[in-house]
Length: 240
Image 1 (tube, rainbow, N blue to C red):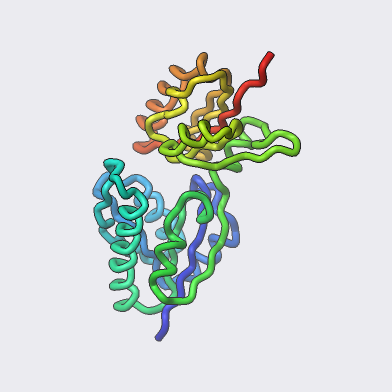
Image 2 (image 1 turned 30 degrees about the horizontal axis):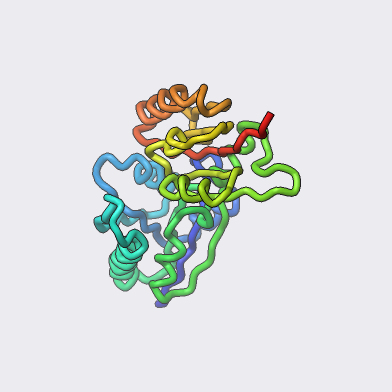
C-alpha cells in the first residue's frame, strides 16, 4: 500500500475549519502532529479536531531546534526540517495510507509543513485555511495595503532590516519580542493575538501611544489560552 499526504489548513481556531478541510481530515487514515511537550495546547486542539472526526492522531516528538539566533539561521532551520522529515518518514513507512498534517492558519504563510513534506518523497496536496493575515484585516476592518501600493510580509527578526531598506507598510509575523517597539520614526499599528479564538486581543493606534497596551494584551492572551500567536500591520505615518 502506498502513502499520500494531505496538508490541510485549519484556520486559527477549530470554528474556522472549512467544509473542504473537514472532509479531507475525515478521509485520512491518520494525522501526524508534532509533539512539543506535555503542555502543548496546539497539539491538544489538533487532538480534539481529530477526535471529533474519529481520525487517529500520531504525535511525533518534535526534534530540537537552535532558537538562539545562530549565525547560520537558515542552515539551522534546514537541519530542523531534515530532522522533522526523518521522524515523519519513519511513521509513514510503518503506517502507509492517507496521512494528514493539520496546519494552523494557512500552509502558505510562515509554516514549514510544505517544505518538510517535499522531503518525504510521497504524493501530496495542499488545502488552504483562513490565515492570520486575513483575520487581522477583517477584525480591524482595513485593507492591508494602500491604493496601488505593496505590502511586505516579514518576521520580527527581519523587521529592522526591512524598514532600513525603505519598506513602510509591513505585516509582521513571528515577533515574540515586539520588535516594532524598537523602531524609530512615526508609525501606526494594527495588532492582533490569538485571532479567531474566544480570547483574541486587538489593539490599534499610533505605535508610540499603544505599545504598553499591546504588551498587556499579549500577556492576557497567553494567560487565557496557554499560548500566544500575534501578527500586526505596521504603516509609517505620512508627514504632516
